[in-house]
Structure formats: structure tokens, C-alpha cells
Image (cartoon, rainbow, N blue to C red; front, side, top):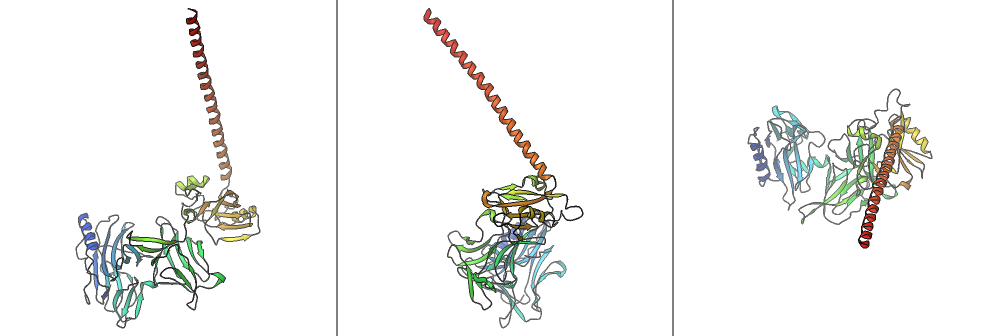
Length: 482
């Protein structure tokens, strides 16, 4: 290894003994004070990988850190247990919050060992057994001298003249840091667990927005547009605002924030799909949101599972006739997480109908829209399109939006004029009606039975009370006569 001394903590072999795994984690997390801000050509670091898979295992060696006050930036080589295997990656942390990961889009799975090497030719590699390369920067032969972490959290490979040959800021994940730019056609992405859908924060020429992606379907669920239809070139995180610039580098708009604090990063959260801007609270010793794009639970795209309604009380309610299918994780009335696959094919068009849900809407925007049509025509359009699984009709505007997903469904006021319609197999609505009739019959029978029982017991009690009073009166009369 050449250059200044850096943290090297991976030479303890990991066995299948849990004690050794735990010991290594403790060593890696408690002994990184020696780290500098750069490593040089020829640097090589190896992390041993456990023989047996252990849920929740994380082995991490911090290679370098910035010389800022807490919280500062740290770069680490990590081995993490993911989906039954071990993933090897380079990570950047601001304090304890992960802000960048080399395996964000494509994980590199390894066994036996995880190796980081800055080669003599200037290429940065992640390798597994037998020198198998799973990730690299592709900077060989460009004069790279060192791997460096900047005070902004940007990982860079630079030459002897400090010219940047590669930087992590050019490969955004789910976080944008202070000082980083996102240009048009770039985006942040996050991937919710146990779902085929994912979120993105995108910079487009006329707007910035949040999008839900599932299969070939893309729908926005939040957006911000500069006034006067001005074009966007890039977005940057300033000290106290998210600023939007045009092609000339002039600020044309900014997203207003609820509080004024020195901002540290913008993040797209993988659990909710919400966009937040965060500052560091010294009192709480963690990061707090200064701004969130969405402040109401039901306005989040996956607040509930596919084919469920987010109610006005922020609870989730299954769409009646689809409940059984959803609970068995089956077609959800359609196929594949509410995606329109099950209605395409021979003979599907005369086997479906539209289930109407008045007072229900969708948070998903930019769906295919038609205007000046009736609700019946809107339903027909969806039924005649094998890729359509739902439609939203606004009676006040006579607008029809058709969807390929049954997601982001929420309850609204009954008088809003909105009606959400879901495509279901023919006869479902009829059976659903019969089911409701049966329920009302059962309720009515229950009420009648209850009244009869109440009358019987009430009459009996009244009879007993009257009888007792007569006996007491008779007894009193006899005593007076005596």
C-alpha cells in the first residue's frame, strides 16, 4: 500500500462462529478514528465474508473521512446481508445516514471476501474471489493518483493536478447533497421493499416531480412548475432552499421551505416515496425534515396496498369484491400488483364490467385523459382497452382518466363529483350487490329478533313486577283487617 496511512481493519478471518462476526462488526465501528480523507494508487482493502448467512449482518470498514465537525462525511467498504446473500459496496455516510452507495442500482454479491483496490493504472475496483470484478470506475490510464472524499461528501478520483476524472455526484442514488446538481434527464430513485414498483424524483424541462413506476407504467404524484412556463436546466440544494435554474444559470424559481436551517441533503425515501429536505438538529443529534413534498398520508402513492383505498381517517380498506384476491396475494382483480395484464388476450372484452366507487379518487397524475365525455363513455373506453384496469371520472369537468394501475386510490368527499371505476370480471358487481342484500337481510333479521326478544323479556319482567305488587298489596290489606 502506498501513500498516507489509512484505516485497514479487515484482516481478521471470519468463521461461521457468530462471536467472530459480532467482534468484527464492533472493531469496524469503533476503530475508524485513524481515517484520512484520501487513499492512493496501489491501495487495497479486503473484508472477509461470513461462511454462513446471518440476517442483519453488516461488516463495514471506514476508509476515509472529512475533517468537519460532527456530523462529517465518511466513506466505507461494506459487506451486508441482503436477500440470502452478501452484497459488497462502497458507501458514503453523513453521520449515520447513508447518502450514497455504489450498489444502489445493481448489487454486487460476493462470497469469501470483498476487495477494494485502486490499481496502479488508476481504476477503482470492487472484487470478489478470484479477482472477479463486480464494479469499477473505468478510469484506467487517465492519470488518476488518489481516491478522495470532499467536504461536500463527493467521492472523487483525481490526477496529480487535482483534475476530477470520476465523481460520485455524477451517479445520484436517492440523495442529493448540498452543493450537488441534478440536471435535466437525471433523477433520484428509491426502491420500496417487497414491491416491483419504485419511486423517482425527476428533473424535466418544464417541471420537477415525483413519479411511481411499475412495469411500463409511469405516473406522477407530486410536481412543481416554474411560473410562465420557463424551461429548467438544473436543480441545486442551496443553504436554505431548493433552487431551480435555467440554461443560462439564472435562478428562475425555488421550492419554499417551512423552516430556515442550514440544509444538508434532499432525500427520496424508499418506504413512502416522499421527498424531504433535511437539516441536522444538534439538540436531537439527528436529521430533521425542514420540508416534505407530501404532508398527508393518503396522498402518498403506496399508502395502502394495490387494490385498497386510503380512507379519510388514514386507514386502508380493501376494495370490497377484490378483498379476497388481495389477501391471497393473487390477481387483485387484475394481475401482478394491480397491473393490466390479465385483461389482454382472446375473449377478455365481453367478460368484464366496471365497478363504480363514488367519492373515490387517485393521487396518480398524468394518466391518459379525455374531455367532454360521459361517465358511461368513460367506462366503455376502459372496458375496450385491454391495458386499462381503472378509470377516474370527474363529472364537474366531464373528464376521464384511464389507468393501467390500481394504486394510489383514496377516499374524497362525496360531493366532489369524482367516481373511481375498477375493471372486474363480469358478474362481480351483481354478486357484490347480492352480497350486500344478504348483509342487509341479516342485519334486518337481527334487529327484528332483537326487538322480539326485548319485548318478550320486557313483558315477562312487567308481569312479574305487577304480580309482586299485587301480592304485597293483598298482604298489607290482610294485616290491616286483622
